[in-house]
Image (tube, rainbow, N blue to C red; front, side, top):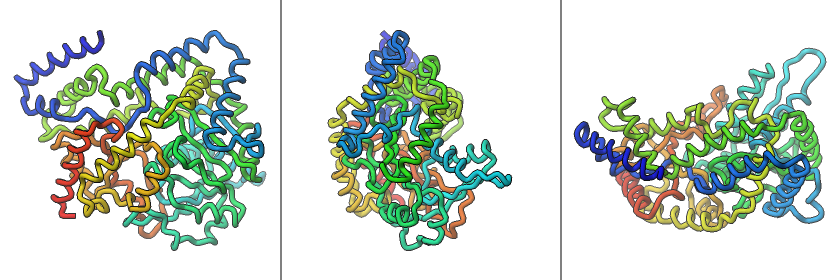
Length: 489
């Protein structure tokens, strides 16, 4: 029914455009309706599972909450291979409203531990790679403002050649003065940073591992053995596909158990998320699911409307700009950035969703991604790979295959520092891209040559490979090859 109504509306728009703007009609027809993020669920699943959980939660009590929590813990420990007797303890797992909830609690605990009675400013220092996860970085800035504290960074820059950690630049004296070592993974594959884990142990510094971009919870990589805490996201475009949630594993180390106690004590002070807020979150995420899958011809209709609102005077219709507007729109954001929303305990409805997401089988998605990544790379001359995908070295590609993970995004790099030109080039070839918002650089960086700045300002999301068919991937490969030839890489 909805598809039929949308089809009639789209037909009406097409007739109008054929009179008003044939070039726009051509762009709407030829542009692949595939956006940057993949969502490993369906609209049917959203309605008949996750919204059903919302309704079901109205009729269950606290006992069901305890049962769901234990079931999630058991399944999570089994997935990360920590369900043996020596590690499967009650004080290893934290289940939260979102991954940023755990991150916030760890940072807040470290800040509180530095509190003194002499009125000095709270201050901590974090050691990590110069490329930072945007959501966490912005959260650190907001904590600074709210807590009137200072969060400093000791950054280890990355190479512009292959985006690997520049271990030769590490100053162990600087590392020894840090309060936390933050190990993040990049580009959907485990990031080689063993030296940071080893230095954390050497200088007795807590180690937090952000595994969100390590290739998902269902890859072969299950977190580093030296990490005191490892965290995963259950968000909109993550796997497990739970439409919200955070999972943390705390090791039996001294720092792991101390952090576990501090985090759980803080989480215990939070109110339980309301079913209303859970419902609003699911509705917002449903919008993005519809966009990702172009249900009801939504993307084509939205693109036509956006043309008349924003782009009538443009030489080309910059779909990448429209994609950025949608991603940054706070009214339909799928991610909870307000602390009042994510500093809550997950509702029973959300616990049902997390349990459901953990129980799903993602093997088809995993194999699909490997095949499609290979198809893209095999149809772009190898001499251009280093310019377009610097991180995809032979070693990294081997890690992609061995890890069998699921990437949240697919990226391309603007080697010449001309990201807008690259996006316009692909837009002219009817491909929807999106300027990077995932990775950021520290704005007050003390690095003399901050490669992270160059990298983060020149990354672009490609259409998500998991959402593309073979024809669309070959079209993308042809366009990227043409761009590389145009730039004479």
